[in-house]
Image (tube, rainbow, N blue to C red):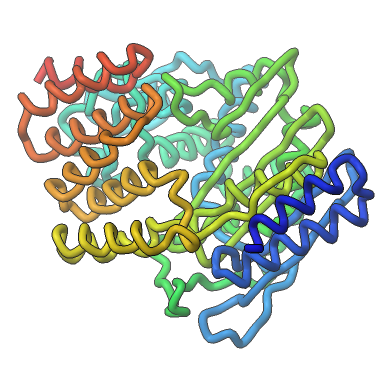
Length: 445
């Protein structure tokens, strides 16, 4: 019997009978198996009702395998850190020091006239229309990607401008603000002298970090757990502020990732961040105080499935151990040559049913297409997005694939084709507000 079936059977047999110690042992077994098959190298924390259910480390802190991971290691958390600038903006709003409908031009000087059309809340929910350019390029940007408030586009300038607004109002550096006004009240240690795990790929080759590692972007699993608990308990933000922070646009991510607020309390909160082969996932559920934190320096895109399995163990429900994601093993082949990449993908699809997880195959194809988009291989990306549409997708997912095709054509300067696929995205899912906003912006050009 394969490991996945054995784990699932064990969970069924002991459903409802597991003690806290049993659950810890089963989480340990799950994570050990995940490490052995190469889909998890990192740290895990699970807690419920204010007590620790399980905490463990699996694998290495560097590509040389010279150091084993421990709970003291810090990991890059990627876009999860946008919770801090978002929380900072809402804290200032809560204190009456800033209004969300105020214009960007009030707080940041030297930007073009479009800055008088962008409101603080547009930065907060990533509907500003500001494209993914550097801060220097921002000062010479002639026009936005779309009218603010009409579509979603997650770009780093939104984050950086939020930080500048915080600095303008408080008169202190952003790093100091996070430490004194957010981390300290929340009990987040953020020991900047602690070791940082180095990223590597599945061949144990080091992955160079592109960009900078600010202290608030490199945390331990315990640090992230403490932050999640702080938001859940309303220590720094009241209910209306949490509600605003949790609001996404048209089904897209909010500043809290994916979150639900009821009666002024965070009921569920889940956020993923990644970059440079690091990945982190934080999850909390208010009904029983459950927190699950997973952090890795060897990204294999399985943290969601591992989180679901851990929750199933805690809840005494059956689960299935995750398999490898085919995305990681096909993306470089597609990058090198579309035809050869397709041949490799089809071969793995035929022979790898016991190795790979094909339940999320369309998503793997979409992610591969996005990987190619980031490398400006737009025609190849379009081919993969089209391939993903041949699967039985939910309307929202199919609409997203069409939106990505339209984005590619827009980048290629093929306006007619971009308009066609934006319209197709909207016809497929009328709730796709992002495609509507982009179409409106394109029509005005």
